[in-house]
Amino acid sequence: MKRIVFSVIASILFISVQAQNNEMRKLTFKEAVKMGLQNNVTLTQQRNQLEYTQVNKTATLLQMGPTVNASADFYRTDGNSFNQNEGRVVNGVIDYIGGNVSANMPVFAGLAYLNQHRAAINANEAQLHQVVRSNQDVISTVATQYLLCLMDRELVRVNEENVKTQQATYDQIKEQANLGARAVADQYTQEYQLRNAELLLVRAQNAFKNDMALMAVTLGIDPASFEVVEITWDINKAFADTTTFEYMRENALARRSDLKQAEYAEKAFHHNFSAAKGRYYPNVFAGANYGSRYNYVQGEENRTFGDQFYNDNTRLNYGFTVTVPIWNAWQYKSQAALAKVAYKNASIRRKNVEIVVKSDVQRAYQNYNDAKTSYTSAQAGMRAAELSYKTEKERYDLGGSNIVQLATVNQAYVRAQGDFAAATFNLMFQRVQMAYAEGTLKFEDIPE
Image (cartoon, one colour):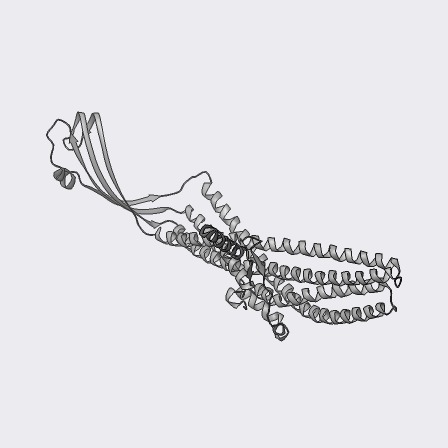
């Protein structure tokens, strides 16, 4: 009996856990953006690249200072070898122990190292702005996909309501046709309207599932594990916004991270070009080397390790090395030409990004004004379509209209509902797209 009771309890607990695991997570827009910023592949790669540019900036600074190396040698010679301690050739087995410390420092290299460091600084700044813009790209992408999902879900709801309405109308007409109060042709016409409404519902559901799956890829989660949450932002704020086109344009030119990234990249390539030209000049390096060694001849009497390594065999070398490039088969010229082309291309890209920024601002501002007009128009259209449908339905019930007119008015009403839902959500998200065009879009500014 106890075993049966325990089995029942275990089964209940298992079903409860499964129900919790299968429960859909309600994902708000801000939570979706946060998840996208954490899981987006491109953004993660850009952050990794930023870490490299930070290290490279430090490395190019330190390369203008000295480099120090230490080495140790442990080896044996079996045969003829020259014994430096005794100044004679020894035929036998000799063990050697040696140690060296060397230091080198560039004195002059045609300012190549300095320009490489300047290039690294600007490359790091460019990558920093690239990460900022990639953050904004993710927010904008998630906003667009979240908007589509909300619109799709609303269209599913509208079509579900339409199917219910068409089903009720069909049942009513079918009953009236059986009683002889309606023509059988009306029944068949309404059946077509019902089947067409069911088809539109299936298509709306498929579009919703497809857009949810697309957003799941952006967020890096299972598409069957979450559902979007209705946006409750105050739509009146969109109409109260008095941002001008001139302000948006100036703000974007001053703050767009992709434009700043292009500007810093252009500077970095310019310094790389200067560094490549520095190879035409002589190089001067200062260096020093200090070392010693110990020799042990097998089978003979040898001086102690301390006498040899710390006194007799020590040596110190120091001085300068001057290298003058005379002929290198145009290798330096080729490298300088390649750096010059990269600099010119970066300059062209910077100018093009500036044009893109201006175009983005113009489109965003126009889309914002269009969204406000579309909302007011769709709102009025839905009220008119709803009233027309109710009036036509009453006329049809009273015999003053036919089924074709009712179907036409109903289609217009369904379309008006979908247009109003699309206009509402589109207007809500226009402020996000305007901030994206300006370059001011931040996660912290997204309303709950």
